[in-house]
Image 1: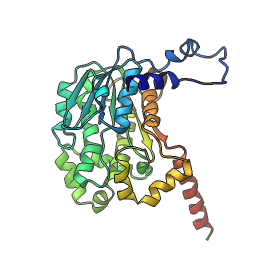
Image 2: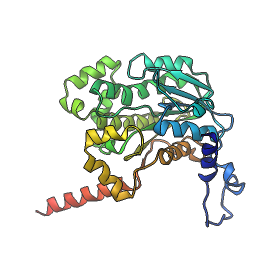
Image 3: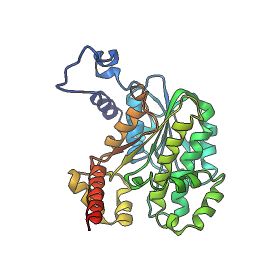
Length: 308
């Protein structure tokens, strides 16, 4: 695992066939190992035991980071990955006390928080809202006193949250809930939230990142999200159940494959690095262009409707 992570780290910055110009930053002239350097930095990765979290943790270790892995009690992680961690924290992020339990045990300064832990729409709606929205919201703020200068937060959203601009008011209402109970009470009165809890949670974490970036409530903090499409992880079977096999495999057929966890990990590592120092408040689609296809199809459908 460590060797694979290091190999991936060396491959990430490569720009084969592209000549360096006089304007190329010094860090690029020094060669590929000069980019995405996490030496001496601490990263916290939630949901590290499998899938995107495991590959992200492994990649960050390979780039020199001191990685603290967070996952639910009993989650089985690859032994070789666990051996590379600075620490493992077991916490139930589906419970209101989970984020505080994590924040209490993390030793700072923290340079990067990766809010990756998540569950699919096949789980009860309260669990989905808790793990996918409320836990990252709370953990980000609870860790604020431990963030290093110019720290970064990268939260894993989803292409399911594509409509976040249209639903921002609802997202802000959920994010403004003081307690998990308040958020659940709001959702209990809104059947749409219960039915579409996964998409709504992902819309809201995108809005939360933009809000953090815009309001600068944590000085110097950069906040971004990545929005994968379908990814070849243990959760893919749950997405087939929730979305239908035709939808899931249709996306892969158009793109040529499902994303791999490494595809998403590379984007996370970039956004958390100094090479992305001027990027904040961005939702980065990491979907092989599928979101662009959906957008053009929606535009075409709207144009056809308007022409009738």
